[in-house]
Length: 457
Image (tube, rainbow, N blue to C red; front, side):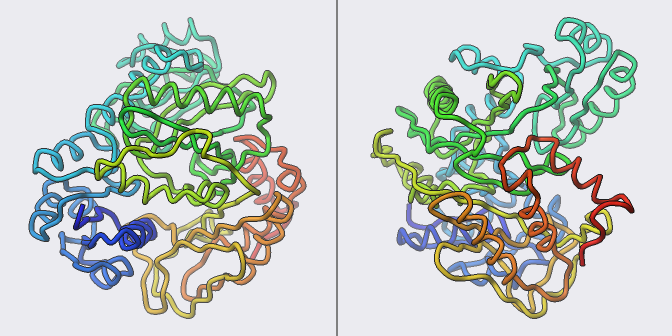
């Protein structure tokens, strides 16, 4: 691998470009009209314009990305996360063009990207799955029949994709009949496939994911991450290791993730996501992300393994060259996603020109970002502007460091969620690690009431 095109933007494009540079690989950025002066375009060795600002006319066009790679003389393409990262047709188009796709084969992306097929693979590998439908359902009648077997409450999920789109929790048949057409329509719009699948809704659970690496022949895990703190099914704070997972569950869950990777001959970095039932301690596989995750830095900080560099090496044809016994963890790491949103105005995005910027520093503080004075938060893309990631020898130390680091983070010109994140650190349920997938939204709802904690500037 000599020249890598990064088919993304923002902080993940910057992250990948830096990892490639560390390996002596030349880099090519792609940029829409809105991003021609963005950080990733400035950092790369070469930049190729790919069209208008809307992602549907630039970053989401497989043919345009492949054409840019050919124009720039790239021999490999890294998709990052989001955009085209889990599109099997894009991975296939890259391979058909004679280029290396930094990720699993298109057939594996297709297999694991379809939640129904992924469940079937998990079952074949002996990995526990949430009780639910084996196949996707396309109409209300089939959904009603399936729900009667699974038992209410059930969760409706898009069979062909993730990201929270199309998900509904329904408590009875009437709710199911009402919700199905809307959820199916959302799925069809987002993924071109309106099929849904149903699974038992676990009322109190943690969302825990296992980082994996595979070279197509062998696979290992790189421990787990806690991802339960979510708003509208989007993660807000992640940490590693997961504070609510004991040694027995950790061992069983990580072993299950490795079995699943070996079942499909997985090649690259990936993540197996699980729900851990608060009441029973059981864990269930829910899906696999066949890409690098937003929250990968917490795993890197506790293990010392550069996951993006590993992706690049595996894609170059190198074997894994690391055994399970070589992977050790030390201390605790927490990641805070900072978005250009106003928490006191319903998390309204705040695009605009960036003014003064001060990023936190000091020992064991990492900030992944594209921010610079004069840059701009575009209304066309995701509002994530930075990830502040801290490490400590234990969780209390990491949280104290996080409070300090967030206090140093300053961005003028746009609203941010920084103060809200600091407020979360001070909540007793967060400090104790006693939370689940519903905790943050419940707290935000209470906070929004006039008698709650009050507005945060």
